[in-house]
Amino acid sequence: MEGWSKLQSSLANLNIGQSANKFAKGFNSQMQATRERLGQVAPDEITELPQEYKDLETQVEALKTAHLAVLKVAKAYETETYDYPSQVQETVTELGANIGRGVTNFAANNLKGTNLPAPSPAAAPVPQHKTLPHALGRAANTAANALSHVPGGNDARLGQALAEYGGAWEKIANERVQHDETIARRFLAPWQQTLQTSINVAVKARQAVRVSRLELDAAKQTLKNASPAKQEHARLEVENAEDDLVQKTEVAITLMKAVLDNPEPIKNLNELIKAQLRFYSVAAEALNAVQGEIEELSVAAEGDYRKSRDH
Image (cartoon, rainbow, N blue to C red):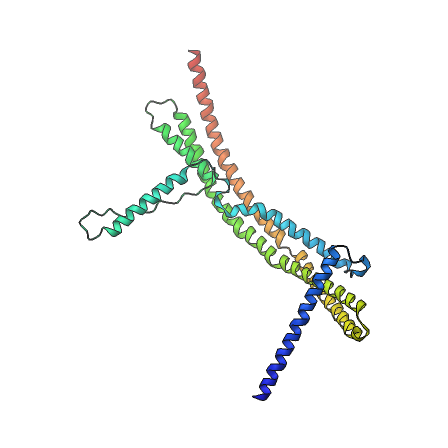
């Protein structure tokens, strides 16, 4: 038991010593950073990092900026309603329908076994996609349906044109859903993964180099101002800090090169373009087909109009 107590005491003293040393280094490096920021350190007293490291640091920072710039806009594809018209009031109607369905289902469940008539449970409505193509398709079909219910109307051709236009946008809307899902899976997910893992790992390695460099320069200042009795200890601290900086710089260089050599970002961008190209190709094909049909209706309607004016 006595031996175990001595061991515990020794470990405690060691941990306290390590913690105190770590705290002292952290304090000194913060002081060094503050002095540098205030211009209180001469340029020749700041350890120069290898040019290769500085070049890689600049390139990785540019790569991070590029990822964030594209991601800031492309993340819109994760939200279906990014182009949905704000003036469309379907959400209010749907809210009222959902409340009514909730009341009906509550009554159906709670009036069982009573003398009051229980309504039949209401089925949930089919959810509507909230995209501009879906909105255009629904609007055109609603307009065509309104014209078709007017007996003896002169807008048959317009109703037919609107129905065909609505049908084209239904095809486009279906492709739009696939377009967003593909981009989320094949572009956004891996693009963000690169940013959150390899790029951020390289950034953290750079931060470790910066801290190590500050600790080295702080140790050099301590050695410079050390009393003769503390010279040897201060010199050892400088040597240890130099070794640490060399090691951390080598690690950071390796990680930064790996990030910059990674072919995934270009591959991801290619997947984004492929998904967009497919969507716009389907949209162009659908609209091109319906435009030819509607142009025939337009020519026929204009011909009838001119004939009526001539008479």
